[in-house]
Length: 69
Image (cartoon, rainbow, N blue to C red; front, side):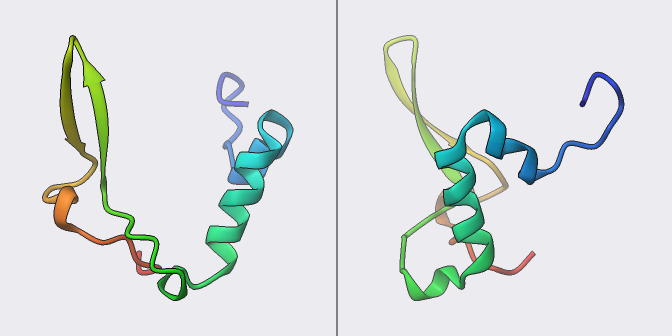
C-alpha cells in the first residue's frame, strides 16, 4: 500500500501479524489506565555490545503512556 501511495492503517496489520493486531485493537478499544501496564515512551535496546535507552519522544523514559493524544 505504501508503495502505491495508499494510506496504511492499523487494520492492515491483521493480515501481517494477527496476534499483534489483536493486541493493538485491545489497547485502542480499552482504557489503558485500568491495567496499570507501566508503559513509557522509550525502549531498551542492545547495540554494539551495550544496553541503550532510546527515547521515542523528549523525556520519553519518564513519560507515562496514556489514552491522551
